[in-house]
Amino acid sequence: MRNGLRQTRKKRNAMNCFPQTNLILIVLFFCIILSEALQASSVSAGQKIYNRCIACHSLSYNRTGPKHCGLFGRRAGTVKDYEYSNAMKASHVVWNNSTLDAFLESPLDYIPGTNMGYAGIKVDTERADLIAYLQQVTQSNECK
Ligand code: HEC
Image (cartoon, rainbow, N blue to C red; front, side, top):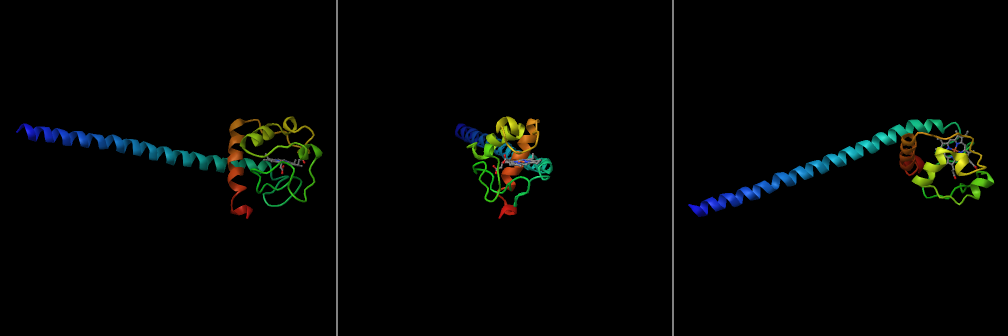
């Protein structure tokens, strides 16, 4: 009789463990889905902001400004067959999230003497979205 009771208790304890584990897994799962969704919405918002750049830039060929394909990890002023300002060539900047964020906020403050005649994007979230888009698209099939 006592033995039987102990066993049921043991069983119950074991069962109790699982709902908690499941809950953690479910929360984790939703966190992943949510972060993917946020990332996707950031990229698509960034794509719209990129419309402000296409007056001068294209992803895959040089226009008024240099092409953007392969931008991340590239040294500033190094696209072949594009004539940069001396300021850009001498800047020693390597393009990544933080250098792009600073440059796009205020190009002339970040690289005084740059030819990029653009006032900059002052809204932090807009820059973050644009950079998320650039990071994805400049390494995507559109650039192959
Ligand atoms: C009015 C034209 C114009 C607009 C609009 C413009 N750019 Fe530029 N951009 C340029 C020019 C010109 C250069 C080359 C600057 C230099 O040599 O100093 C440049 C350079 C750059 C570079 C450096 C690239 C490299 O190869 O080193 C980046 C990054 C860049 N632009 C991003 C952007 C983004 C993102 C936008 C939109 C928010 C934008 N630009 C809008 C004209 C423009």
